[in-house]
Every structure is written in structure tokens, then in C-alpha cells.
Image 1: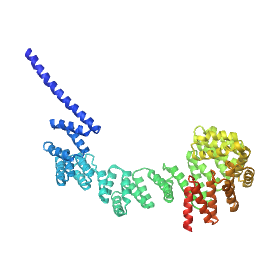
Image 2: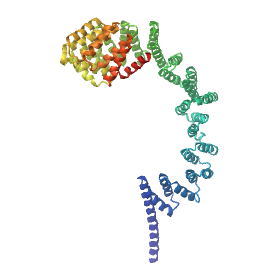
Image 3: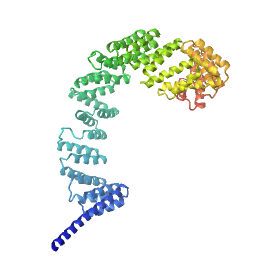
Image 4: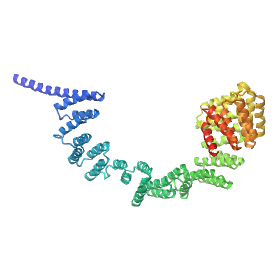
Length: 605
């Protein structure tokens, strides 16, 4: 019994000693890792070396030494460690690291020898080749890395059948200037992985060097010939032709790609939209028309017909000889949308566009009004009907019928305001304007105050402008009402009445710092300029500058006067006025324009 107890005690002591020994080593390793993490590399190396000298099989200590030596640039120690390591541990990773250390030591042939041994040690290991090529790339040995990846392809059979290292090789070929190799690898990547945006980006980068263009063209032409039934190949080739400016050819291959991939027009509508954004309106119209011709059975028919009309209108806007016939053609297209898709939001948009063209282009306010009423009647639930009511209010404001205008705004607010904040802000702004025009300045001020946080930039700027004018009521309330009434005269196109009111303000008001005094000069100048009375237009600007040489809007007055002098051929005077903006108003919003005008006038001289 005593003997058994003694043997058990000895065994327990032996097991405890081993456990204690392992715990001590692990504690040392943790300490070394902590030193390494905080950058105390000398302490980390000392402990790693101690652990490794006791047990070379402790792989974490070996890896810690490699990391720490590298951080300290101790290549000689790395080389010594690895030369010893490969004597008993012939794993590929050790030969890869040894090759790196030898290369850093200037032993290039010995490095190649180590890397060859790494490949022989694990010839079927895909990750070995990846690690080796990564180190060679880091050492800028790009051709060696390329050869490593090529060897991997010869020796490693992938389970999914995909070509190894296409992405890596395409980048390396770019680095060594092998354009054809880079493109071929990218095209393989495209066919196997569908990485179209990535491949387009690489080819685009190569296209920036003119020396590459012939190779790119030859390679891509051969590629599309060999892969004509692949939709990605057709998409890429369409993108390529677009970049060359061959829009018709690009469209041809977009149609092929769409047909092959059974996308039912998705690629074509996208192509048309991109062409439209790029300003290539002719090919955009052709693409939209292609979908329209397929009829309502095509799911993109409504989008195509609406986009076609909008694009046609955009194109015609830049046509100086835009005729009534052209406008009627656009209106006819929008009418087709209404007929094909009645009660839809697309139809509601079409109604608004028709009304806008009738009012702004044809000056046919009666027809525009009829179209807007038709919209509110046919599609009362659409948000666009709220917009129509706001536009109707504008028409009635311009006619002087403020009661009717108010009614439209109140109805629009009640029906659509809660669900559309932007529309609600526009309605509030119009309501504030009506109070302003009719001289109810306190009510207008209160309404504009509510809109001071408006999200719409145009409204926000207009609200600031109106608030600055209304603030003059604390100095000259009667004249502010006169100014507001003059603005309303301009809305109603009664310029004679407006001139009388603005001149009354100038004749009776000597407070030059008020907004209404300053703006009256600027507006009168604009009115007379529109009447081709340059002498009067200049007079009001000169009076402004003389009486208020450093006001908030003086730079604007100087800029307008300078522009007028350019029109009358007084170039030296114009340069003098533009220069005054540069000298006296360094923060003016007209600074860049003034500089450009000066350069332009001096070049002409």
C-alpha cells in the first residue's frame, strides 16, 4: 500500500512538473508577443530566442522571431535563422522566406535556388505559389512573380475549373508594360467571374497611353469575334466603342448583349440613359425609339417614351430656330404617354410638361390652364395635381386674380401638403408672396419666417431676399409697400406702372443703405436695358455707385455697368470697372467672371 502511494506521488510530481514547464513557456510566449505589440522589439526578440533555443519545434516562437527581425531590419539574423531552419524543416514557406532573405542580402542566385526548392517541396499547393509571388512582387521582381503564377497554372488543378491568378497577373502585366498580357488576363477574368466594372476600369487605364491603343483595339476585336454569343463580351465591346465615340456601333452591341441575356430591354434603356447624360442625344433618342417601336409589350415602353420626349425637348432647347411645329411634336409625344398610360404618375408628369410648354414656349396661357385643370380632374390623387394647382395659382397671380390664386394654394395645401414637404414649402412661399404683393408686410414676414429653414435651395435664397426687403419696413414701411407693388406690376407685365413706383422710391427716399433703394436702381437699369435704352440703364447704375460706393450690392452694379460698356464698345471703361471689383470687393461672387472678362477684353485688344 505504501509502495503504491509512493509510485502515485512520483507520477503526480512528474505530471505536475511537465504542466508547470508548459505553463512557463506559454507565459513567456505571451510576454514576448505583448512586447512585440507595443514595439519593444529588443525584449520580444530576447524572449523569442530563449524559447526557440529551448525548443525549435515551437513554431510560434520561430514566427515571432521572423516578424521581429523583419521589423528591426535584421536581415542577417533572419538569414542565419532560416539557413538553420531548412536543415530540419523543409516546408515550402521556409524556403520562400529564405529566398527573400538571400535576395535582400544580395545573393540572387541562391535566392532563386531556395524558391525552386519551395516549388518542388509543395508543387500542387496553390497557396504556396500565391505566397511566393506576393513576396516576389513586394521585392519588385515582377517577371519572377509572373513566372511563379504561370507555373502554378501548369501544376495546380482547380476544382471549379477557373483559371488561377487572373486578377494578379493582369496587374503584374500592367506593371511590366505588357499591354496584351494585361488585357488577355482581364478578359479571362471577365468571362469566368463576370467582373465587368473591374475589367472596364483596367482597360480604360491602359487606354490613357496612346501607345497601347492599337494593341487594345486588335485584342478586343479578336475577343468579340471569338465570343460573339457571350453577353458580357458584347457589353464590354459596347462600352469600348462608346469610349471611342462610335455610338452607333456601341448601340448595336448593346442590343446583342440585351438579346443574349434575355433582359428585355434593360441594357438598352440603361444605354440610352447614359448616352443622354453624356450629351449624346441622337443615339439616346435612337435607343429610346428602339424600345418604343416594340410597343406596350416591352416593360420599358413607358420609361422609353417619356425619356424620348424629355430628351427630344432637351435637344430642341439648344436649337435657336425652335419652331412651333417642333414644340407641338413634343407635346404630341407627351399626349401619347397620357393616352397609353392614363391615370398613371407618368401621365401626370406628362400633363405638367405639356402645360409648361404651352405656357413658357407657346405663351398660350389658356391652353396651359386647361391642361392643368385636366390633370387635377383626371388624376386627382397624384402629387403632380398639387403641383398643377401651384402653377395655376401662378397664372392667376399674373392675371391679378389673387383670390382665385389663394384658393388653389389652400386646396393644394390641404390635399397634398402633409405627404410632400417640398410642395408644402413651395405653397407656403407662394402664400407669403401674395401677402407681400398686397402690402400685408406683417403677415408676409411671419410666413417667410416659417420658411427660413426651407430645404429647397431656390426657395431658401428667395426667402432671404424677401426678408431683407421686408426688414426695411422698420425704416420706410410705406416705401416697402410701394416696392412690393412694383414687383407685382412686373409679374403682371405692367412695366410702366412699375417704373413709376420705383422712381417714386428713388425720388422720395434718401436712405441709401436700404434694400429697396439699392434694388430699385438695379431693377430700373434692367428694365431700360430690356428696352434698349442703354443711356438710362447706365444712369441708374452710375447713380447707385456714386451714392453707395461700398454697399452690399455695389459689386453687382459695377459688374452690370461694365457689361453694358462692353456692349457699347467702351472696352477701356469696362476693364476699369471690372478691375474695381477685383480691388474693392475681394469677396465678390463676380470676382472670377470679372477676371475672365478682363482677360477676354485684353486679348481682343
